[in-house]
Length: 197
Image (cartoon, rainbow, N blue to C red):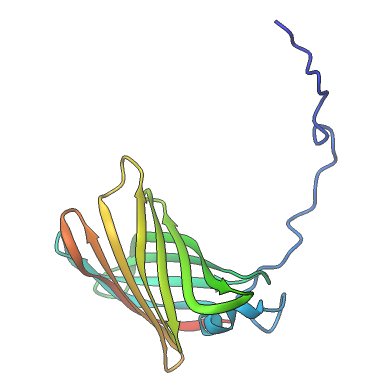
């Protein structure tokens, strides 16, 4: 058995440590990198949002929840999306953590210019990855899944539809889901207030 590497050690093996990530990601358009021109149609969504909503599905009881969403950019032609939610009791007190999601929204480009079409990739820790195709119309963003990929242990989710809108400065949304043998049904809706950006 030959133990010597004929290519020698990799160049990073004994390199010095690196500094923290040097590029800024921001949800506040007053600081950080300039917004990429292709994101102008999605500009109203950039920010940090917090509020409450109501959820349900034919297979579960209705529930109240709170949520924080952060939509940010780093100067490149996509937005970063992060969402954290938690269940609320009848007195609006937190009960337990709920859904988390991370993802990216990308404008569809044509001849170097953004169209009104959007692609989104959203994943969550329950083993589901969703690819959305959608359209921005004014301050309204509507998206539907083009593909849903699940791990072997994930719940059977087959489709999702999301409608977002900026209404009186707040972020409102409604989400329909098809899962566990049920067709698209209302699942989540919320009103979130801008708390940053």
